[in-house]
Amino acid sequence: MKIQSVRGMNDIYQPEITLWHEIEESIRQTCRAYGYSEIRTPIVENTDLFKRGVGEDTDVVEKEMYTFSDRNGDSLTLRPEGTAGVVRAVNEHGLLNENPMLKLYYIGQMYRHERPQKGRYRQFYQFGLELIGSDHPLSDVEVMALQQNLLKKAGIADMIKLHISSVGCSDCRPQYKEKLIKILEAKKDQLPEDVQKRMYTNPQRIFDHKDEKVQKIAADLPVLLDSLCEKCSGHHEAVQRGLKVLKIDFVVDPKIVRGLDYYTQTAFEFVTDKLGAQATVCGGGRYNKLFAKLDGVDTPAVGFGVGIERFALLMEQVKKPEPPAFDFAFVYPDEKGLLPCIQLCETLRQQGFRCEIDYQGRSMKSQMKRADRLKARYAVILGGNEIEKGVAVVKDMTAQTQQEYDIKNLVETLKTKVGAK
Ligand code: HAM
Image 1: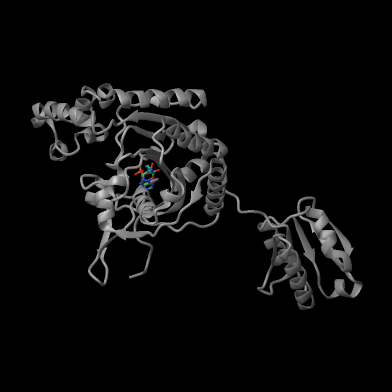
Image 2: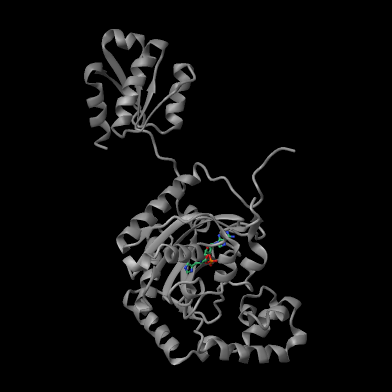
């Protein structure tokens, strides 16, 4: 059997990789501006981290994890998300002792065994960030503002809408949950098996059920947003005020259901109608109880994760990915030109100019064709004849004009043509 990539796991290369680099560069720049530093945690963690952190009743833990025993018989899992690993690392290294308000970001692969389709994969990349140590509503606003900024820079802010909600806390959520369970119990015979199964552990999941009949039932159910305690509703109001001050458009969407169990109070999603079924480009919220749950000191935190594939798919709709153009393509009409060409090429590359040279020993015509395909700004032609005359021919590939230049000052001449690097 021919060996192929694993289903739902993709190779990323030109031209898309150019967009990915742009996105990653923009992420790093933006995170720097907001004071976030990078953290890299392992892709593999102990399975218990996710069972305890993400929650055993979630789809992610119940059905989607890549879990295996290693040679010692330890149960390990390919990370399905980044937050649990970051919290573990912060606890393990006592990072909050040095900095009680810690701002961390990460970019990396995550793994979920979902049914692959456009925008949904089994290996996907996430950019995520965590603001740890503050329960101030404006810290929720800050993380949303950062994400909004990224979307603006990428030129895709118009395609995306911010939805916010609150999932309450351990004071108000249990009461609401009880109320919801009672109502669902009364409608039990109208509910499909999966909803019945989840009814007692995670009844709110009914709000993101795909079945239309279930959706109809869900439409009439009370929402948690109407049963928030004073503290949570105050927090929710303050978040909205902050977003308005920063002129970030949003809608309050009481039906947001986050697929991970650790959320408290603010939950939010940046949603698009341009990606078919995979509408959520970014999801996040506050998780004030996760640190304690993972053996740390009780610490409030807020953060989000963005699917980079989804971000790139949206960017492709406004911008064609183009590999960076070359400054110079060196062309040698005969073997005598090859070594001088390589020398010049190397000198210019060391100074940051993007240069290419053909090693396939092809005709001058083929080399020129390649220079054209690579969108080189100039072709530098140097063979036996030119060396004898002490010149090189420089062809402007846009204007289609060419001129001879003294070989002695060629590097300086070429540099002035494309400007400093
Ligand atoms: P999440 O909502 O599970 O949150 O994932 C965040 C984003 O990752 C999604 O909005 C989506 O863009 C992308 N994503 C998720 N699954 C897939 C998939 N199978 N294929 C492609 N993209 C996908 C989290 O993971 C939380 N850790 C976010 C967070 C950080 N909350 C607080 N801090």
